[in-house]
Length: 290
Ligand code: AMP
Image (cartoon, rainbow, N blue to C red; front, side, top):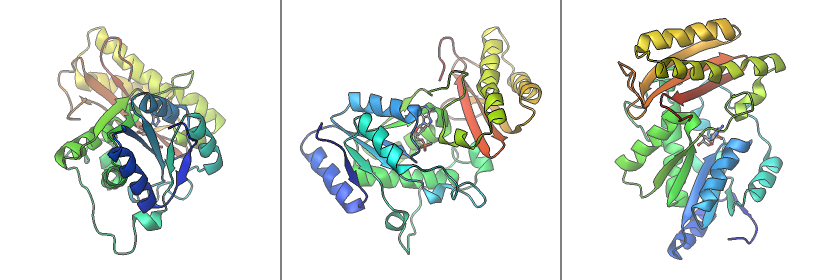
C-alpha cells in the first residue's frame, strides 16, 4: 500500500479493513506472530510482501496455546521495537488484538486437528496445538488472507495448519519458509532470549547435531533407531546442560516415524536448556536445509 503502517487492535476494525482490501481485488498476505520480532519473522514478512499487495502481520501472545506452568507470563514482549521492525519490513496492517476480545467470557469453540497434534511436541505440550489451530483459524476468519506464511522451524505447526485449512475448506494458501539461523546455526527464536551466555553458546549444538545426522544419512545410514540414537548420543556429549524431550525421524508430511529413513524424512528435536525450550529440524535430503 505504501501509505504507512496502520496499527489496529480492534477485531471488527481489522476484519472490515481486510474485507475491503479483498473486495478491491488486491492480494492479501498474513504473517501470524507472537511478537518480539526477529530476523526469522522479518524473512517471512519480506517473502509475503513480495507475493502480495497488502501485508498484515498479527502480533498476539495467544494464552490458549500455553499450558499451565509454561512461559505465558514471562514470554518476551517489546511492542515499541516490534512496531519499528514491522514498519521497516513494509507491513501495511499490524494487528494487535487483546485476549479479552478474542476469547470473551463464554468463549466455547476449539479447533482440534486430530492425530497430527498428538505426536512430537503435542505429547509434551498437551492442548498446545489446539490453541494454535484455534487462534490461526480465528486469524484466517478475521483477516481473510489469500496466503499465510509460516516458518519451517515450527514444522509440526505448519503441517497442522495446512491440514486444518484443507479440512475446514478455508480459502487460504499456506506457505512454509526456511528457518533463519544465527551464525553458529542456532534457529532464531524469541525464546532464545531466555538463554544465559553459557547456554546460548552450547545451544548451537542443537542444529549441529541435526546436521551430523543428515551427514550420516547421506553417507548411507538408514536405520531410524540407529540415527536417533546417534543424535541422542551427540546431545549427551555436546549438550550436557540440556534435557532432551525427544529426537525423532519422521515423514515430513504425516509426522509418522519412517523406517527405513528416506530422502524427504525429517529429523526433529526438542530440548529444554535452562529456561528455554528449543525445537529444531532438518530435512534429510541433499542440498536442502530447512
Ligand atoms: P512465533 O512468533 O514464534 O509464533 O513465530 C511466528 C512465525 O514465525 C511462525 O510461523 C514461526 O514458524 C516463524 N518463525 C519463528 N522463528 C523463525 C525462524 N528462525 N526462521 C523462520 N521463521 C521463523
